[in-house]
Image (spheres, rainbow, N blue to C red):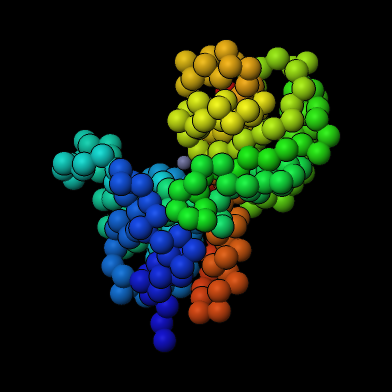
Length: 272
Ligand SMILES: [Zn+2]
């Protein structure tokens, strides 16, 4: 029996049901047909035009991505509408697009746990309850409390040599805000956009929040409250999910014979 887009969707939804996604989100099959047969799948965080071309060159019939491509209402499919170009190109190439976003963030494939393990956090638990018993992010404690500056350096070097990424990524854009001499005990990690978790992390007594996307004013709020913020950039906090998803799909019996690849060109958009 041929493997279809629908079967892949079903397998992903076993670990990340669509009903777990936030109301504002847009997950599931966004382009294509559930009955389309597939031989190759490309995994990516973002469905950019380059990723669509990469999928075509790979011969993939499906892109499984973290971020939805149709988010705000798509009002037309005109050539001069930037937001319409990816869906148009997918249709031209006959490639389907499946997004698992806030539902995946709350699944076993979520990045926060993997990042917490790299940092060496103990007594890790879900930070914000979402769908029982899971939710967003993790909180945990350092076995040996450490000064922020030293901890951050050692975290980055552990991250460089870790195997949580499918390939090496540049860590040049990561940022740290906080008093380097201050001792860190409790850490919260939330992959992706972290601004909305700052007040709760403060309330819960975290010394450091590691996340992927925090705005200026929210960082100032965190510092006022005595909490440091490590900003890895959105991409680096979420890319571990690609490897985890690769592992999950490639060990699935009903997908044996399907070629799966993690995008090699999908990276953080920040250059310098
Ligand atoms: Zn994200």
